[in-house]
Image (cartoon, rainbow, N blue to C red; front, side, top):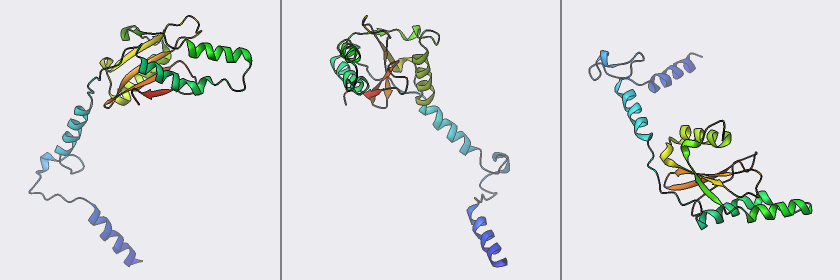
Length: 178
């Protein structure tokens, strides 16, 4: 038993960091005995990460974006095993997806656009984005009962598009140009 305790103490004592008193003065250490400079370096690295430069976003009526919207929504608008009325509604939806106009970001309020505003807040917090990193396109087809939105935002060197207010289960999305 004493052998195991001695071996455990030997292993634990080697795992603890040891700072010599002559290299780090006592007034420069924090409560735990670590140098304060390590904490400052971590905070400076986090501050540098917070800004993301905006990428150029395509126009709302760009043919590449509209084609990718149709391809992304096709699995959600399947016509297999549906009634004639549902098949007709699905075809009408696919036909009228092509009409989008840009929506001003300042007009997006949680009361008027709850899903869109919620997704923007989530992206601002998780991806450190600002208003300059977003572009919103709104569907304008009078045949559609509910408007849906294309939320374009920066995702590294790419522009990612979320299709908001189309599906309640998930947010369909794609990367422009893929």
